[in-house]
Length: 219
Image (cartoon, rainbow, N blue to C red; front, side, top):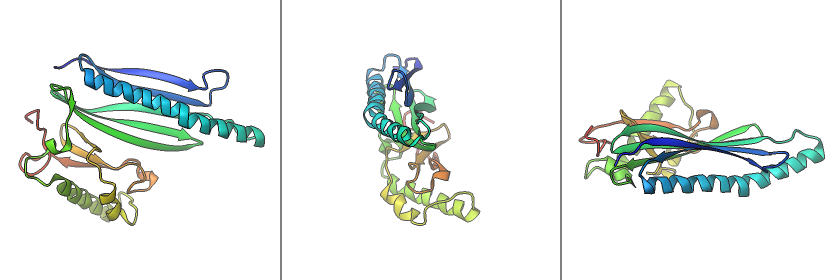
């Protein structure tokens, strides 16, 4: 099954009447004929706007009340959910979404990644990206540790002093996406590095024998 990939854009303002305090916009994928894929991102869209309405809006209203009382600036908060496709090589489709909140001038980003087998309309588990018998979690963490040590030595990136502990404690097999050249493992903003580093991403080139591979594409 290979349908046409498109994107749906939706914008809402909260509250929807006179003085919106929060602007929310999302852009999520849709795939023709992929029922499970579309249900997944439809639920994601609903959860996003529910979060805006039930969590962020009360916070914005409280900030507005405080600003009105103290004569401060009226809050104009923004949140966006955007999609980046990193690999589209049938039957594989890999992508990530970034939810970026800009509240009172402070910007935070939360990333979420998915890789799909479009022929089965199902997600691809991380273990399927490695040859059988490879201790892939250990291999990934070892490679990420090597890259961080090199970046620190070269003075090109900053990490928390206890990054080694955080690296293992915050590892998640769900934070993986694919490109044509490599597997990408990322950590959330603030997890192992200060905010200036954004979302740290570590690229591990494909290796059919010992490392990550494109298991369904024959690459």
